Image (cartoon, rainbow, N blue to C red; front, side, top):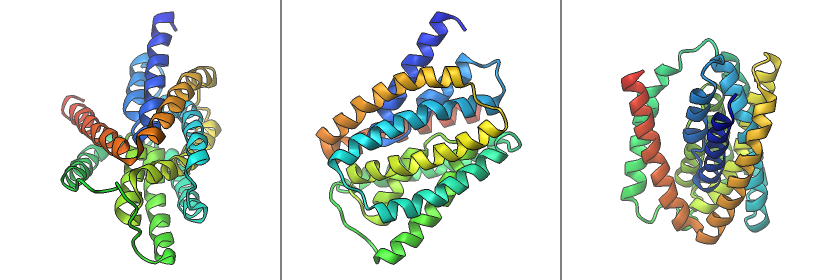
Length: 255
């Protein structure tokens, strides 16, 4: 790998960590960069390598958030465990399933998410818990399983969907939803890493090198999000959704 190519990947990883720490969606930056930078590698190896900087960056953001925002650990664990199981299942199918079939479905969901969030100007700015605590646990467990499966088999927008579901279904404010999503995202990344490692589809040297850049971006992003609060997270969330729609639309039309 050339020095210029590595610098390109490192910059992309750093920006991905920053975006992901604030509102999710870092895969929008990092995965396409890897697809360009190491296009000579098989897709499962690119997906597996992508998870290494992701889990380090997400963990860094989670630690930063945890110092300021105390999540509901029972709810987080209830969502994270099924998410891990779903991620393992998805990663097992990643090399056998045509990810193009996801494009129209994910595009539709993202458009709906973007319109709904934009029209509801007060959405996620204050905590308004919905349902009983027991019902919330059942709901987040089901959501975690589905999102985890999606993250393992495809991935882009996982953090964004987690944040949105925690806001709209549970009633969290955007900042707390982002903090909780990071902890759940660690579980999905871990499940995928274990699976890709078993099949030998991780380039560890590159993944760990990019992790340094991703961690740096995640540290800055999480600090900025805590300082700006839910209004800032909401604005970045909408930008990420718009960028995801544009990127997936391009991929669907031209690939």
